[in-house]
Image: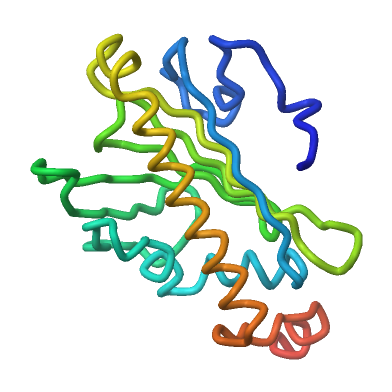
Length: 195
């Protein structure tokens, strides 16, 4: 596990306000999951940018589907998911807010099941030719104090299971060759196309 160091902070502060995501609640819960993948950050980031990545990363037990995607992770792009949580039909709309390839992209919930959701996807060089894939989620349960008291443990359990699946799927698809990255564009290739 990589120490949080500069990312640590006290309850009540939002580390994302400086990125234009104002209005974060004072009492967010935080969830962090990370794993190592035997491929460089460029490759792991490229996997997440691929058109079907999100479809692969939705666990089969979750009754969710991608119904709209702008096909980009750049700020302002949107993803819409629809599905069920128990007996409730939900629509989850996420807007991408940060984009720093191949190290970071982020999204925030515009509407959906949480009172607040901000998710940073980090791709850290592990100094051994691989990547530490790190997901950082600040969230607030719906229904205020009732949601925090009675739903907090359930949300955390669902997040742990979902992100374990997502990380294992990412690792398996990249390391096994099931997903093959497109050739990375070098600066020379880009210059040659301009000529």
